[in-house]
Image (tube, rainbow, N blue to C red):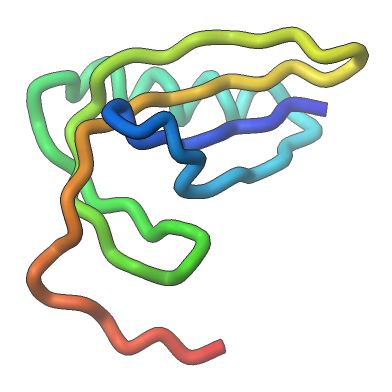
Length: 86
């Protein structure tokens, strides 16, 4: 299993965690952020808050059979928040 964690670079908080069975999806996401290194993006955290984020770095952690990819961002709460229906 491949686990992708979106993290706050300042606090180390895991903002969102997603599990994938395919490494190709994880690499695709990582490549997008690394290619756009100096541009901001928007992230939706696990509490459904919209965050404005800048990619900082990423690391890989091996935990038994799982591989965890942590992506670190400088984040701040976006001024405008979407209405999210569950």
